Amino acid sequence: MTEIPKDHPRYESLLAREKVVAGVKMGFTSIQGLIAQGRGESFDYLIGERSTESALYAERAAVAALLLAKNPVISVNGNVAALAPEKVVSLADITGAKIEVNLFHRTETRVHLIIEQLKANGASEVLGKNPDASLELSHARRMVESKGIYTADVVLVPLEDGDRCEKLVEMGKTVITIDLNPLSRTSRTATISIVDNLTRALDNMVRLAGGMKQERKEELVKLITTYDNKKVLSEAISEIQEHLKAIAAEMEY
Ligand code: ATP
Ligand code: MG
Image 1 (cartoon, rainbow, N blue to C red):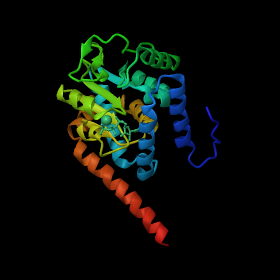
Image 2 (image 1 turned 30 degrees about the vertical axis):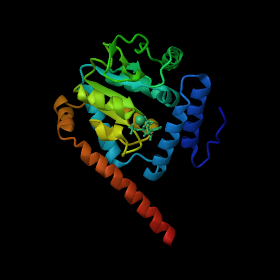
Image 3 (image 1 turned 30 degrees about the horizontal axis):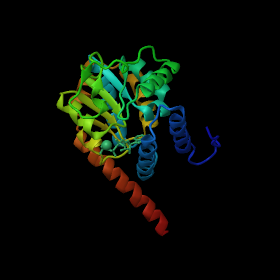
């Protein structure tokens, strides 16, 4: 991996880029994953490379949903495995969620390598190798495990494609997405859309979960029943507008 100097003003972003490149070189991230990362970076610039208020609100609701779930599952793809395997394992541990590998560009080698990567980062069990159930989709993302995504009541699907997100919602599941693009089909169809960078979102969620685990169940239920995803998406877009307006104003002086 190319060494990025720690004092570089965009250290976090460049480090993430190197991690996705390393994932491709090691064979578990697809080459298309590079394009997805680039698209994410550009939205992060517009957002201001920070967790906005609406993102933190969605992250709180997402943690509440995971903590209250009977069978929560975190779905992992090649980009997620490259960027934040240790954070996925921490979030799964603290919320009691299962982890399942699910890939659009699926090969058995890639599934195996991602499972190994998660295990090297502390995961005890990772599903996805033996899909025995099928979602009504025409691509490889249909292949799921019956004790995992297929029967999950709450699924966290970071960097999801719109198709499967829609299908999971149709099946009656609570679908949480992490996607920097508030306009993507994924963001627009999810139950809880977190418009934030994967690494920031997972850090926030692990931190929030630590405190929220001690909260009364009724408090968590209230968070979910009062949660309004349309408002969150609208605010995410407004926060981008405000951020750009502030920069434009600065440039005038
Ligand atoms: P859709 O099918 O939902 O309309 P898409 O086809 O553009 O969206 P994909 O390529 O399937 O989306 O998924 C990648 C999505 O993840 C993009 O919207 C991109 O902005 C986002 N993304 C990429 N990297 C990150 C990251 N590190 N953190 C958060 N989001 C990211
Ligand atoms: Mg897509």
